[in-house]
Image (cartoon, rainbow, N blue to C red; front, side, top):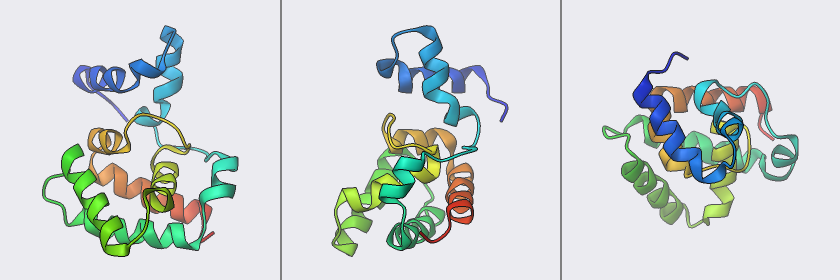
Length: 135
C-alpha cells in the first residue's frame, strides 16, 4: 500500500503512546501499511470460532451500509450491534481486532478502521475468514 505523508503522521499519532524507541513505531504499525500475512496463533486459538465468524459477517454487512466510515460512526455501529445482539464487547472485539490487525493488542480499533478505510477493512475481514476458516 502506498501511503502519503498525512497518512504516516496519523499512524504515528495512533501508535506513539505504545512506543519508546523510533524502531517501535515501525514494529507497532506494520498492519497499518500492509495486510496481515499471519495471525497471532495464541489469539486465534483463544478467540476465533464459529461465533466470531458469524459476528464478523454481521458487522461487515452493517459497515458496508455505512455512509460515514468515521471512528465515531464505526463505534456507534459496533455498539448498536452489541446491544441488539445482547452480547458483550469481549465476545466480538477480539475477533474483529484479529481480522483487521492479525493480533490482539493495539490502539483503538475504531481509529484503526477509520484510517484503513471501509474497503480495506472489508477486504481484511473477508481475508481473515477465508484464511482462518469458521473456527
